Amino acid sequence: ESELGVKAPVGFWDPTGLIVQGSVHDAHRCRQAELKHGRISMLAIIGYIKCVRLPSGLATIFKVPAAGWAQILDYMAFCEITQDQSQDELGFMTLTSSDPLQKTKKLNAEIAKGRLAMMAIIDVFF
Image (tube, rainbow, N blue to C red; front, side):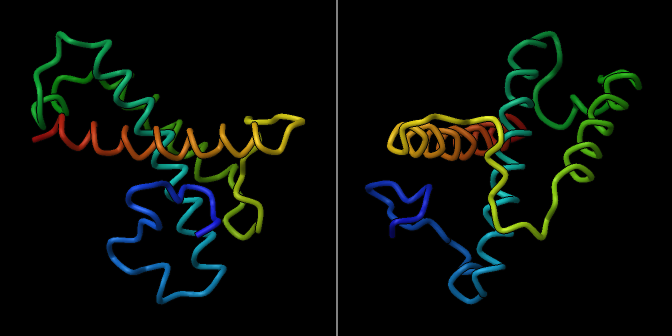
């Protein structure tokens, strides 16, 4: 319950039970995946809001130009290649603070906003 991302009123969020059944390594891997998907979702929802000329839902896929898909795929490849999946550290390289409480607050905010962005971009498609 003292882990990052554990927030009231939900508490420890693991709806599929993947972390409870796995090891500490699996929990770190799931957290890395959550952070990565959250960051990409934050960029995706900003891009969607910025491009209001595009249709909503899955029709957007066919309206994005080839150069746009190339940028998206390049960024996805960059995220996959540059992140070491075996490291114990969760990859919080950009959020720093000399005050441990302030750093924890920033990291929790990133996780919460990433979760919100994942839900928002899913909602856009349906």
